[in-house]
Image (cartoon, helix red, strand yellow):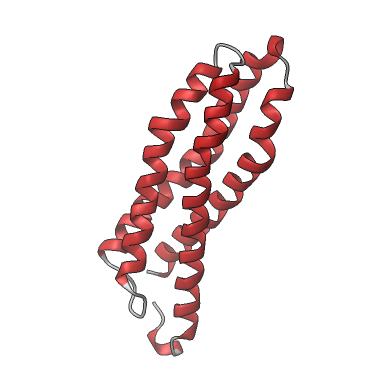
Length: 151
């Protein structure tokens, strides 16, 4: 149970850092790349970011489900079900909102696609920040348990 929890919390906190960086630093710079180089830049971005986030997102998804089904003693199961729901929001947002905009941007810079990407990415940013908060609550609850009751 400890390894599962650590993997889950690590994946969530790492992804929260990644999404904050992407939303607040990386995406705002997309419109400064220039139109002639943008398609190549977008392709490089998509390839690099996928290699980084896909393993973390998969770990987070599977561990979130396992923890919702079998939460550790001393932590409200509701926290893990809410967390799993937020993971589903993140995956749906990625698939139905951000991936299509990256698809549009893959052929070259498109102002409307760029604006839609930045605006819709707030869904994931907020969801991951909420998940990070939930995992900090979980940590606080587990740390408050007597040593003999920790998972």
